[in-house]
Length: 165
Image 1 (cartoon, rainbow, N blue to C red):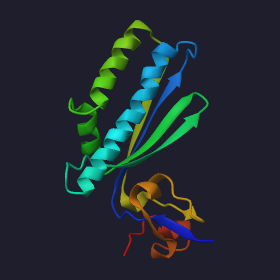
Image 2 (image 1 turned 180 degrees about the vertical axis):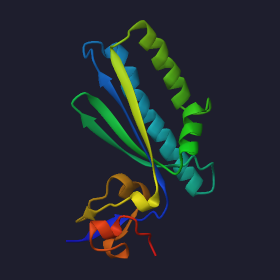
Image 3 (image 1 turned 45 degrees about the vertical axis):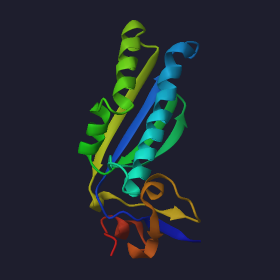
Protein backbone atom coordinates (compact mmCIF):
# COMPACT_ATOMS: atom_id res chain seq x y z
CA UNK A 1 0.00 0.00 0.00
CA UNK A 2 1.22 3.50 -0.80
CA UNK A 3 1.05 6.04 2.02
CA UNK A 4 1.25 9.80 1.64
CA UNK A 5 0.86 12.82 3.89
CA UNK A 6 0.09 16.47 3.12
CA UNK A 7 2.89 18.41 1.46
CA UNK A 8 2.46 21.78 3.15
CA UNK A 9 4.93 22.77 5.82
CA UNK A 10 2.90 25.78 6.94
CA UNK A 11 0.20 26.62 9.46
CA UNK A 12 -3.31 26.26 8.07
CA UNK A 13 -6.77 27.59 8.80
CA UNK A 14 -9.56 25.04 8.63
CA UNK A 15 -12.91 26.67 8.00
CA UNK A 16 -16.03 24.52 8.26
CA UNK A 17 -19.20 26.07 6.89
CA UNK A 18 -22.63 24.63 6.31
CA UNK A 19 -26.33 25.04 6.34
CA UNK A 20 -29.22 23.26 8.01
CA UNK A 21 -32.55 22.89 6.28
CA UNK A 22 -35.36 23.10 8.84
CA UNK A 23 -38.19 23.51 6.34
CA UNK A 24 -37.45 21.23 3.38
CA UNK A 25 -40.73 22.17 1.69
CA UNK A 26 -39.56 25.82 1.45
CA UNK A 27 -37.09 25.31 -1.37
CA UNK A 28 -37.55 28.98 -2.23
CA UNK A 29 -35.84 29.85 1.07
CA UNK A 30 -33.02 27.31 1.23
CA UNK A 31 -32.13 26.88 -2.46
CA UNK A 32 -30.44 30.33 -2.77
CA UNK A 33 -28.30 29.51 0.29
CA UNK A 34 -27.52 26.05 -1.10
CA UNK A 35 -26.40 27.42 -4.49
CA UNK A 36 -24.37 30.34 -3.10
CA UNK A 37 -21.52 28.17 -1.79
CA UNK A 38 -20.61 26.48 -5.10
CA UNK A 39 -20.38 29.94 -6.69
CA UNK A 40 -18.05 31.10 -3.93
CA UNK A 41 -15.86 27.99 -4.19
CA UNK A 42 -15.68 28.42 -7.99
CA UNK A 43 -14.65 32.08 -7.51
CA UNK A 44 -11.97 31.06 -5.00
CA UNK A 45 -10.65 28.29 -7.27
CA UNK A 46 -10.43 30.74 -10.22
CA UNK A 47 -8.55 33.24 -8.04
CA UNK A 48 -6.22 30.49 -6.80
CA UNK A 49 -5.44 29.48 -10.38
CA UNK A 50 -4.89 33.07 -11.47
CA UNK A 51 -2.56 33.69 -8.52
CA UNK A 52 -0.59 30.53 -9.35
CA UNK A 53 -0.08 31.86 -12.90
CA UNK A 54 0.96 35.27 -11.54
CA UNK A 55 -2.16 36.87 -12.98
CA UNK A 56 -4.07 37.75 -9.82
CA UNK A 57 -4.09 38.26 -6.08
CA UNK A 58 -3.53 35.27 -3.80
CA UNK A 59 -6.65 35.31 -1.64
CA UNK A 60 -5.16 32.64 0.65
CA UNK A 61 -7.63 29.91 -0.31
CA UNK A 62 -5.97 26.50 -0.54
CA UNK A 63 -8.91 24.24 -1.37
CA UNK A 64 -12.18 22.76 -0.18
CA UNK A 65 -14.08 19.51 0.22
CA UNK A 66 -17.87 19.39 0.15
CA UNK A 67 -19.73 16.88 2.30
CA UNK A 68 -23.42 16.07 2.71
CA UNK A 69 -24.74 15.47 6.18
CA UNK A 70 -28.12 14.48 7.57
CA UNK A 71 -29.08 18.12 8.18
CA UNK A 72 -27.54 19.65 5.08
CA UNK A 73 -24.33 20.37 3.18
CA UNK A 74 -21.02 21.11 4.82
CA UNK A 75 -17.87 22.49 3.22
CA UNK A 76 -14.41 22.11 4.76
CA UNK A 77 -12.16 24.87 3.46
CA UNK A 78 -8.41 25.31 3.90
CA UNK A 79 -6.85 28.79 4.05
CA UNK A 80 -3.35 30.18 4.56
CA UNK A 81 -4.44 32.60 7.30
CA UNK A 82 -7.44 33.89 9.22
CA UNK A 83 -6.63 37.37 7.94
CA UNK A 84 -7.07 36.23 4.33
CA UNK A 85 -10.25 34.32 5.17
CA UNK A 86 -11.78 37.35 6.91
CA UNK A 87 -10.64 39.69 4.12
CA UNK A 88 -12.43 37.53 1.56
CA UNK A 89 -15.57 37.25 3.71
CA UNK A 90 -15.87 41.01 4.17
CA UNK A 91 -14.95 42.12 0.65
CA UNK A 92 -17.69 43.71 -1.46
CA UNK A 93 -15.64 42.68 -4.52
CA UNK A 94 -16.24 38.97 -3.93
CA UNK A 95 -19.27 36.66 -3.81
CA UNK A 96 -19.51 36.08 -0.04
CA UNK A 97 -20.62 39.48 1.26
CA UNK A 98 -23.56 39.92 -1.16
CA UNK A 99 -24.71 36.34 -0.44
CA UNK A 100 -24.43 36.99 3.31
CA UNK A 101 -26.53 40.13 3.03
CA UNK A 102 -29.20 38.30 0.97
CA UNK A 103 -29.32 35.47 3.52
CA UNK A 104 -29.76 37.89 6.43
CA UNK A 105 -32.59 39.73 4.66
CA UNK A 106 -34.46 36.47 4.01
CA UNK A 107 -33.70 35.07 7.48
CA UNK A 108 -35.26 38.12 9.12
CA UNK A 109 -38.50 37.52 7.18
CA UNK A 110 -38.50 33.72 7.64
CA UNK A 111 -36.64 32.84 10.85
CA UNK A 112 -35.93 29.16 11.35
CA UNK A 113 -36.41 28.02 7.73
CA UNK A 114 -32.73 27.58 7.01
CA UNK A 115 -29.76 27.89 9.31
CA UNK A 116 -26.12 28.55 8.60
CA UNK A 117 -23.06 27.84 10.69
CA UNK A 118 -19.29 28.03 10.57
CA UNK A 119 -16.28 27.05 12.65
CA UNK A 120 -12.75 28.41 12.23
CA UNK A 121 -9.64 26.60 13.45
CA UNK A 122 -6.17 28.18 13.19
CA UNK A 123 -3.90 25.13 13.24
CA UNK A 124 -0.14 25.40 13.67
CA UNK A 125 1.93 23.22 11.34
CA UNK A 126 3.10 21.27 14.40
CA UNK A 127 -0.52 20.32 15.14
CA UNK A 128 -1.30 18.61 11.83
CA UNK A 129 -1.06 14.91 11.01
CA UNK A 130 -2.48 13.34 7.84
CA UNK A 131 -2.42 9.99 6.08
CA UNK A 132 -3.66 9.20 2.57
CA UNK A 133 -3.49 5.53 1.61
CA UNK A 134 -3.57 3.90 -1.82
CA UNK A 135 -4.09 7.07 -3.81
CA UNK A 136 -6.74 8.73 -1.63
CA UNK A 137 -6.32 12.49 -1.98
CA UNK A 138 -8.91 14.54 -0.11
CA UNK A 139 -8.99 17.36 2.40
CA UNK A 140 -5.67 19.02 3.16
CA UNK A 141 -3.81 16.60 0.87
CA UNK A 142 -5.97 17.64 -2.08
CA UNK A 143 -5.57 21.33 -1.16
CA UNK A 144 -1.77 21.35 -0.74
CA UNK A 145 -0.55 18.22 -2.51
CA UNK A 146 1.02 15.19 -0.89
CA UNK A 147 4.44 13.68 -0.27
CA UNK A 148 5.52 10.17 0.66
CA UNK A 149 4.73 9.50 4.29
CA UNK A 150 8.35 8.66 5.10
CA UNK A 151 9.28 12.33 4.77
CA UNK A 152 7.49 12.95 8.06
CA UNK A 153 7.70 9.53 9.69
CA UNK A 154 6.03 6.15 9.42
CA UNK A 155 3.82 6.54 12.49
CA UNK A 156 1.08 9.10 13.17
CA UNK A 157 2.59 10.33 16.43
CA UNK A 158 5.92 10.90 14.63
CA UNK A 159 4.27 12.83 11.78
CA UNK A 160 2.34 15.03 14.21
CA UNK A 161 4.57 18.01 14.58
CA UNK A 162 7.14 16.94 11.98
CA UNK A 163 8.09 19.40 9.26
CA UNK A 164 8.85 18.41 5.67
CA UNK A 165 12.63 18.42 5.14
